[in-house]
Amino acid sequence: MTGGNTTQLMRLQTEILEAVAQGETLPAIARLLCTRAEQYAPGISCSVVLIDDADRLRPLAAPSMPASFSEAIDGLAIGPDIGSCGTAAFRNSEVVVSDISRDPLWAEFRMLALPLGFKACWSTPIRNPGGKVIATFAFYFRSHRGPTQHEREIVATCTHLCALAIEHDRMRERNTQLAYFDVLTGLPNRARFNQLLSELVGGQEAFGLILLDIDHLKSVNDSIGHAAGDRLISTVARRLAGANPKLIPCRLGGDEFAVLVPSCTDHETLGYWATLLGRTAKGMIQMEGQSFDAHVTMGGALFGLDGEDGDTLCQNADFALYHAKQNRRGGYTAFQAGLRTEMIHRIALVRQIDQALEEDRVLPHYQPIVNLETSEIVGLEALARVRMSDDRIGSAGEFHSALTDPRIAYEMTGKMLRQVARDMRSWLDAGIHFQHVGVNVTTGDFQRGDLAGRIVEIFGNAGVPLKHIVLEVNEAVYMGGDDDVVPLAVEALRNQGLLVALDDFGTGYASLTHLLNFPVDIIKIDRSFVSRLGIDQQSEILVGGMIDIVRKLGMRVVAEGVEDVGQADTLRRFGCRLGQGYLYSRPVPVRDCTRLLEAFGQSPDQVLAPARRSA
Image 1: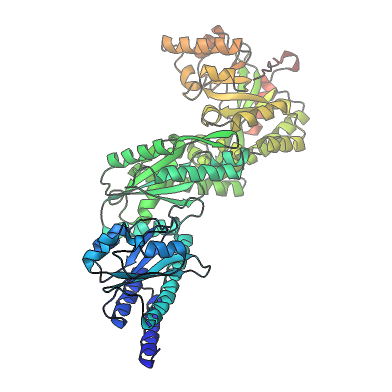
Image 2: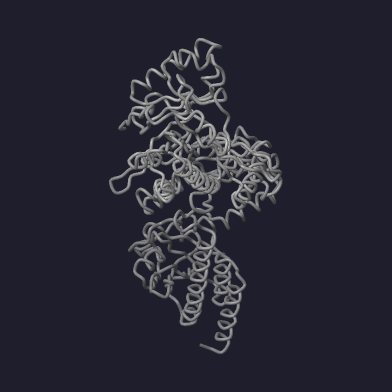
């Protein structure tokens, strides 16, 4: 090698390494290498062809050759007779063809080369550090010949530099994949979502955002295992990715996904895409002989209409998602201004209840359940009350939305259980008779999976027999899920000796057929039915029918919301023996309740033992 050649190649090496260090793209670096090689070896044309993971040719650079040449070979599989480049990659060795018109390697491709004046071709494989061919570097000659020593020196330098550039580019791709794409699903992750969101907001073009949660992922993890949970996540992700090429799904973490919807200008269109996503994500998933169903819940917002920056848009879509999870599980809710107000109010309530819990301002009030024949108190329902910061007593309706927070609901129930156990112990110690006290539980209590253990421990420590406890489960909690978590937990508690009451029966979640399958001892007919007694005949027919069916199933019936004598008379006529409502007493604090029990409590020899029912 002459001194001039050495200087040229050293200058080329410096130029390429600087381009790599400065983050120049791989196609640009390959074009530069080809251009310099053509300058150093006048009369030749140069190309770089990548070999993809499927062992197919992917042209990268050929600056002096027509685009039609590269397009013709793009996607061809390497093989023993695929021109010079495909054969060199297949053999993992250089291929010199001195006469394209006669060499069998070019039998299928010579009409690509000959019209361009190419008579010979020399292709050299480019290998990674492990020896695998990742590309080829080719010289095309306009005479029948092979490479000179000078040309071999040029190509040796170029293939080395090209290998470095390709490996650097692939490492950068791997780092980008790790930084911006979720490992489990392959979808863009939260960091990439934030980038895409910023780009869309910066472009000031209309788009929509749908936030999406997978329903009951925790139940799948707990009942089948985390491998099944991962299968659920990855399957839903794959389904979302295949829903439509216009949509951009991202995984934000856990069971949370975001879907960007470019060029979406109205809520009707956004709702269409949400419906498509919900339908696409839904479906059975099989794993190790078990199957489980995939469902998603979604909330959506429009850029511009529902938020003029990324943070506001995400927050409002999250408000819509929260509302959907509370009211349309498995469905979609579009953002409306009122949802934001509702959420802000809920957040404020959560803070207030949190503070009340810390300051021990949560206390039970008790409402009697009476024998409609004798007006004697048979039992009680414990209802949560909060002493507000202004010393006013707040009813459950005032802080109901705060209880949709699972943590608040869990802590509230714990506080109530401990205080009810303490009050019941004091009545037992004083010889005051009562059959049972009903305690209400929420979805948040079941989500932890330790409800039975908590109740047994709290009442056991207080020395209160569990036969005095009625677990009151709202229909929305009992019937709202599509898994067996609540029924199984309820049955476990019944096995400990507790009675179970289905509260607010008839308000829309449960049906009479559910009573054949769910473990329930007491049915509490909702006040909305009782309030219509004496007003319209249809309500009387419904209430009379419910009482008759429930009694024949061996369960006790309690009518809620009894407010006048006429309602009580009608209920007695229908055969209902127990009632609860303002006609007898409002919910009262423990001191007043103690006086009521002393004055109107049922004597032990008059107790009506409830029939136990097996599910």
